[in-house]
Image (tube, rainbow, N blue to C red; front, side, top):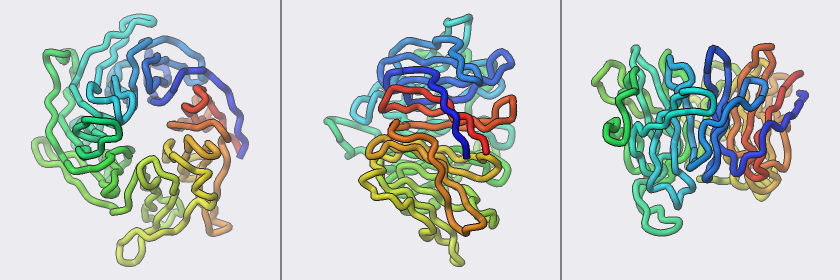
Length: 354
């Protein structure tokens, strides 16, 4: 694997990212964790616009289906100790460097969220890290997941007209992990917390209940489901525990239970605060991009080596402290990884070739 790096921005405490189609072009967004800007970039990493300058506090962004440039974003989540005023906002482009922001819903402690589509309906799933807070490092109020039907037209929502959310699952301590995957032809969300990894399926028909399945009881800061070895069964990749240092892949045994198959071999003192996670196909192989923010602060890509019959790690970067990673294939057909190297305030774009 060859890695070509390009630094595209130096953004203080850069954190969240999302792909976006705007004016017919494939673009991406990068926003900061603290009270700093959100930028729009072209596919090649050229900065196009400033979406906002503050207040920031962005953990998650996602495009609104079918819209031109419109997206949803968390707002005012600055840390687990400073997120009681967090909410989800609607960002709509009005002109260059001119984006309208309106509140979709007030969601204290919202960390991750996503839009899932099933049976022709878009559903919003909102994952809150906790549900209450009275002092620093207060974890007495477990997190929860909430859901709602997301209308096609979001023009009617603002501070006085909020989207109503319904609880799906409560009692989720340190509700941190989130990724979207396909499950039986529809979108589903894999959510990780201290109680394990849970698969959330939107209602099969409008008005029905959400379906929640516990995949594992292993404490999870983040999880992925990927068929790494091509045997038709999904392996479970887990970062454990919350902001932890353990990176393990589990395989289904003959009884349908996930058992350890592989663990990253470096000392856990080197892999503290594992955080960045992105499952994708990289150079034609199912892969898991993982980065950590303390210790050696590396970013790696994990894949299955069929010839060796074991997992293989490639280094994407070292000593950068990656908070989040995102992969896409550009218009030239090349694999691209964009990361927010939070610990050095660096947004970087890596072109990956054989």
